[in-house]
Length: 483
Image (cartoon, rainbow, N blue to C red):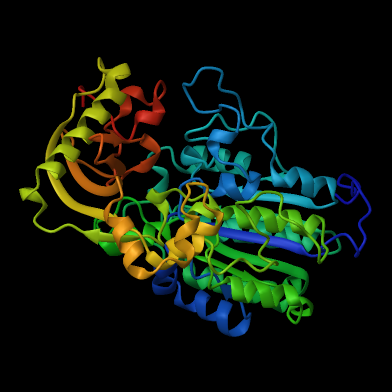
């Protein structure tokens, strides 16, 4: 193996981070869910390993794209199933390509192949993306063990849990290459992707034992350890509540640096950053910083910072490239008695019309939707302090607000033409529940609505089977006429 995977370049301590990276994530677990359901692991991370838990983050569904490429889906070539010109994602600027060139051996494992991160909605890879790729194993194992049942109902491969199989493979990788730089990404969905997190506690003991053994054997002495999730639950009953809304947008993210690195200025900055707004783009920027490791490192884009640099205390969602629909830092004021307000009913119908417009390309297969019920409505109330601080970078002519007196700011906000609303509604047939953020221009009486600011918040299962292979991007909206 050492002969097969010779380093592609010789690294020096002056230009390179010099540590392994082990990143392990869970699907659909919020920060609070991780603390609630994985108490033994959480305690070991904090009390024994001294990990830093990032308190604020961005919970978009494209976390991995941001972390692994530094780009959004719109900035990358078309690869969505059913779209014209869609191609596999091999040519994306994956971070592991740079790491390979720098001498790292790379490893990637994730379960639940039918909902693979880059296979479910995208066209997947034509060639093996990393040095050690577990997808072929899972495809074979699933075909062997899951012939008579669905994958999520089988917890084991033989006499070993599927979760422990994944952890063992990572540990074997570290045992096989003790003297080589390694980059690992593990992602587990089986226990947490469904509409509840009831299976998540099954992972606690095995994940704790894995971390304990990795630490005991010295593997963590020279490894940057990242334990994380991509976002909170999107389809559970909790998701329909205000708490659930926040939890979807606040995933778990913890980072533990090697002991020899603990007293550096970089770790001091990391700990300060744990109380500041961070995003998946910052993780990608941190990886880039690792490959050009010096105190004068400058971020490659305005929307991202290396976590080894100090992130500004006044950073806003706008600065970080987080759209308002996903921003957990905004103040949403609940509108009570909204049934009496004509504008809210109009907003509900605007959303329904928009959904049906999207479905017009599949109107033969999908039922036309009707508004069944509006469950909740919020109006965006700008944070005045955030407005003051963000204005120095604002391109919308609001710089004068930086030192304006309070009454002047209040007057200006009152006159604001563009307002934002967030509405939770239910459609029929199918009882689909959606959360939509849209803008309303009160002067011109116009609405601004886009699909990327829309979330399906209850599970839709196989109700959109009729377009599964033709218009998968509409699967969360479509209710097939033939059920």
